[in-house]
Amino acid sequence: MGNREQVEQRVIVALDVPDEQSAIALIDQLPQVSFWKVGLELFTSTGPKILEVLKSRQKRIFLDLKFDDIPNTVAGACRSAARYGVDLLTIHATAGRDALKAATEAAQEGAIKAGVEPPKLIAITLLTSISARQLAFDLKIPLELPEYALEMALLAQESGLDGVVCSPQEVAQLRQTCGNDFLLVCPGVRPTWADIGDQKRSLTPAQAIIAGADYLVIGRPITAATEPELAWKRISEELTTVA
Ligand SMILES: O=C(O)c1cc(=O)[nH]c(=O)n1[C@@H]1O[C@H](COP(=O)(O)O)[C@@H](O)[C@H]1O
Image 1 (cartoon, helix red, strand yellow):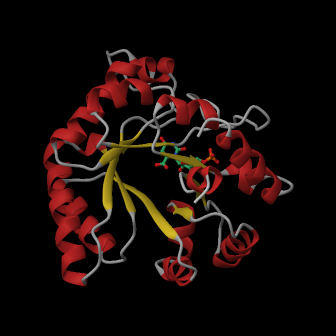
Image 2: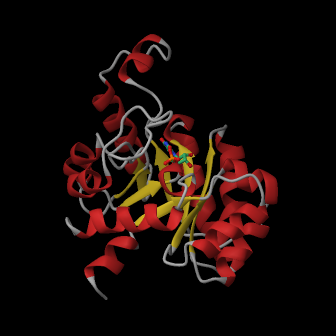
């Protein structure tokens, strides 16, 4: 496998579209994409049907439902989601230690019962749409943002999770503290030519990989581009220079 193919496998494209038809159109338009993220918009619209579509095309799946509830409820949700045989699944670190532990155990149980590989359960540290100012003034968190993100990552690691979702701006620090076996997945990635949109703590694809991300999650710079294939190619070429 060449460098290019290897690095392309580290890009997860966010399938943030409203229905199955638009999702299938994008999946088929971008055959080189091997890893897709199904999030709240698409899953609420199609339910698990879209997961079957992706599996029938041998794609890897990040099911990003960002569970955040009491331990019993998140455990039930993770047990159910794990049965789909997806590769990655998300929960918010703010659900707390008991919920994170219960979710980890339940995801294993659900997968074993269904006879599929358990998903890697990863926790959201702090949404990449939140700035340091918003963390302090709106959320009233009295910690510096990098320290808060690190605390959430350590909470996830201590609770037995496989990794976290973090902004590329925090990934170097998290890699150093959490080690190489902890999965670091970075959304909030923006090539220099793309709109920043609602993302607040962004880096370019090359910078995010250099900083230590295992996977990049990229949505609108590709999916909302006039020519998604060209956007994908530009990102892939950028990454090949650092891989
Ligand atoms: O869990 C995520 O994937 C996620 C966490 C986070 O902190 N920030 C974030 O943007 N995401 C997701 O990553 C994707 C980013 O999409 P774009 O901003 O269009 O590249 C979206 O599907 C978000 O739901």
